[in-house]
View (tube, protein in one colour):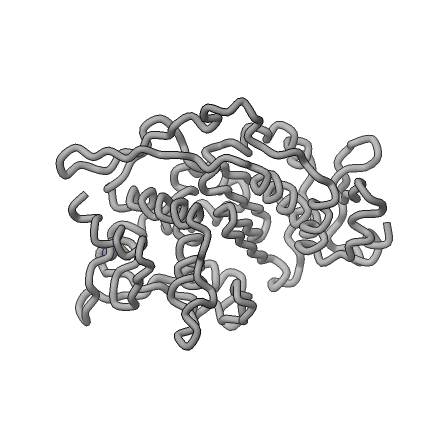
Length: 336
Ligand SMILES: [Zn+2]
């Protein structure tokens, strides 16, 4: 892995620098230096995000337009651009267009956004005066982040998956509110390498490294594809899918091999491992209610009407999907 060794070392040592390409690690100079927007520029224009702010993990507000990562000309224009163009074109046809993209394209596209967020939030934005603040201390997360970085090398043709696909990707059709600022929603979680994006009529979620473990329960979620979801319902579903990922008690283990200068190939070891224990901990409605309340902004006492119970805006008492019209006064359903 001669070429990659340098950047692996940087990741391991968390020694990022603003003058190295986030993807290939090459030294940037006046000639090859570009900036890559973590949230693509076309999306920022589409949803008027340019002057809006995103809340970073440390709670600070940061303008979307300044959310950039250092990138070399070659990675930006030769490797990343084709993915960006493909997604942009698909998005012109909204939800149906996005459904036509391959899982691989969506993985690299979402994977880059996630990586950019983490790179910015956890590495580049460290408080220089207090280096302990904001660093990741969980070694398992470092391993996962390291693997994710390796997987992204597939964008440059330097990596492939041998016997598995790393992510669970979910697409739901959402209703498009009239106000442009209500048409965009973004949530990331670094405990599970998860992002949820609502853009126009597209609701997109990904667990980047559960190796399809949560996706295997997707049939339970099919019912939520029967109606176009209200933004609140999409947040509830985000809580649901994120929580399931948090319940996973195994960290996938990989073996990387490389022949000569060829791409690094990653093999997945059986997720179950040697233990017969289920790979997900039991669902706990009380714990889940907290997450749902946090993500929806709805008071806990509404989300959790009594201990062990949880409220839902997704289905009625007969488990039939509920349609909540986004153009209705929001107070109408919050009273329920
Ligand atoms: Zn590069």
